Length: 333
Image (cartoon, rainbow, N blue to C red; front, side, top):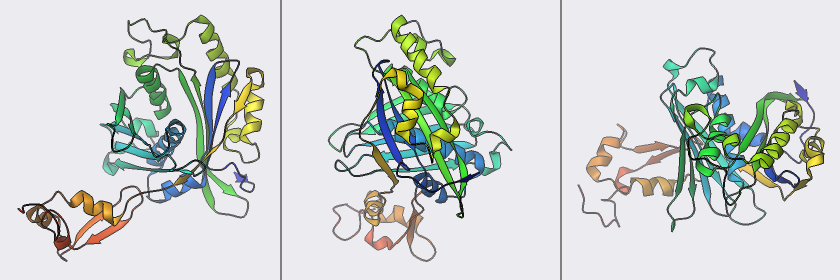
């Protein structure tokens, strides 16, 4: 597929609200950022798809966290795809872009030939962690892996852990700009029913897979009608509309939801970013004794470390590390 030139909405999250439906949402375009994330590794196609989907979910979920907070998504399974991990860093100050990173750990020998990404995960859990600064304990929410995609798992997470009916519609893939190299383009829409003071939950278990709550377990009749109508309208979206590049997000929201009173808020830019550094590597190794570091030292007499997210390589002198390094208050091996 050949596409036209980039537009200003690339790598942007647009929050919106449907006033006539009590529904809020986010519209995401993730293009150069996703291209950078996936270019850090040589993933097989099924793993690329998992990382792409996880990054998109993380960006849409993370857009609501406060300045300087961090939201992490982790998917762990017993299949070939052992771990998908993402981090979303909220801006330091208003107006700055958010940053995101992602990676996957997988067993190449166990990959299911030509199998879709979600089948590679197996049984496990979907977790969201919110880091609210060093003075506060991180929030953790966890639900089992259900459905046929990571989006299904995220919807189940919100129903079960937050009791919020949520819907994700995503599309992503490689495309070709006119006269340029192939690159990733991705677009998605998230819908979420506005929270109520007293969710409509019976306490008898959910109607979803494995007894997990679903949207219909949480909504009273009037709310369910509004929610269903918004979802039917979302079902009419086309993949090319979500990724652009010629359809602007604001125009798409009007096209889909003009009768629901769409209202948009300030967009949030998102970029690839990894905060790893030599200082942080040294800090992580500061708990080890000289004996422990000896087991980590290469034949060349160095301690090395690689960032799983961005691929940065650190090559350090073991005599400057750990509890026995000069200036440390450790008591040695």
